[in-house]
Every structure is written in C-alpha cells, then in structure tokens.
Length: 188
Image (tube, rainbow, N blue to C red):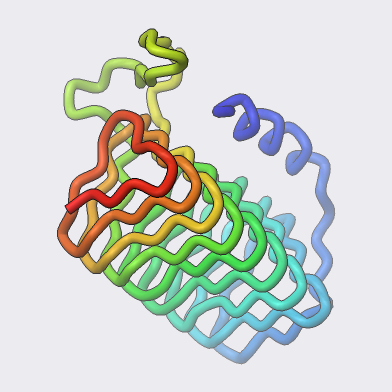
C-alpha cells in the first residue's frame, strides 16, 4: 500500500494551480495547489504544493499542509496541524495539534487532538512492516501509518512508523500503536 504514496507523488508533479474554493485573507499558498469549489481555507494556513484539496474540505486556521498531500471530499484539517505527503480519504478529520506525515488515512477516520504519527525510525533505518506474518522492508526511510476506514484515535495518541491499523480500530487517549492493529481492536 505504501506504493500509493509514490504513485500520488508522480501524478501530482503534473498538476496545475487552480483555486476555486474560498481562501480567507492571511493564507499563504505556494506552487501547484488545487482548491476545489466548496472547500474553505481559513486564515493563517500555509500550503506548499503540489497539494490537492477536494470539495467540502475545511482547512485551518493556522495549519501547515506540505507537498504531495491529497485531501478527499469533506475532510477537516484543524488548527496547528501539519500534514505532509499524505493521502486522506473522504470524510476524515485531522483536528488541532496533530502531525501526520508520509501516511495513508482511510475514509471517515477521526484523529484525536494531539495525535502524532511518527514517520522516521529513531535509528534512521528503512521502515519495515508486517505483511501476512512476515516482515517486509519497504525500502522507505519515511513511512507513517497505513490506516483503514473508520479508525479513531484519542487525544495525544502516538502511532509509530510503519504501523498498519485496520478498519474500525480505536487507539485510546495517550495510547501507542505499533505493528499491525487488527480490525475493530482497541489499544489503550
């Protein structure tokens, strides 16, 4: 699934800037950024393209959206968030004081305030993930989380690099997720 990030990067390199949605005064938008009609970018937001923001998205205030981020319809990125090189599918919420990098976030996920997705191993080696009971080297220096649909995290949750969280799982407040989290699981 991490190959989706590279595919997204290649597609986005050919985007052209188009701003059809509402951009409040005090926003900084640089490069190839698409803001579809019906999207709203609140004051203080800083966006570095290429970035794609779909209809119904509500961004900011005071957030940082970095290159190669694609936000599906009706997503929310709140105050003091940073999102980098991430695919966020429709209806997902990344509220205040959250960091998400080099990740795939499924539909209708809700990340609690202060959720941090680590995307770099402390020893700087490539990220390894567990796939069908075997460990696979992704060859990537940076990879955050691969998150299924309808996942929730509590405030101040931490997700370690290369974590896979299946649909319907929940990470409780202050919880730490790592490895593979099964469908419908609850991590404290």
